[in-house]
Amino acid sequence: MKNTMNDESGLEVSQASEEKAKRRRGPVFTLTEEQVFHRCEQRKHSRICAGQVLALRDLMCRAGWSIKALAGHANVSISHLSDFLNVKKFFTTECLFRVARAFGLLLSRFDKMAEARAAA
Image (cartoon, rainbow, N blue to C red):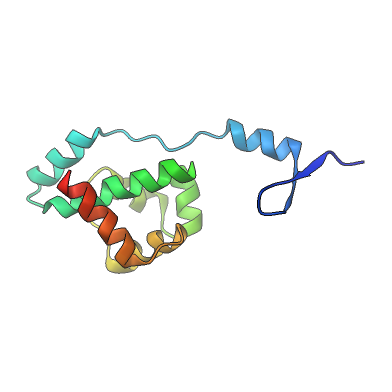
């Protein structure tokens, strides 16, 4: 007999896969919030740039997703996500759409989250 249980979605999950998921490392961010704002300022980006980075970090933390996990869900490369989170590159509207959709959000909702974080 398999050692399985139902998760909250009703899908059967083995205890081994559940334990493996618990051991997985969640998101790790190399920059503090202050550093994100500072980098955006140095590069003469608007504060919304920092807001987008911080909103994405918030979503990743809530979901417990690493960059690799987000890349798989959003169909965006790991390197592109890393560059965005480290304020080295901007996302295109298409990438922002994919990332928002990966979290089940409309782009307009993600934009509102980014605006709120930028205003902080």
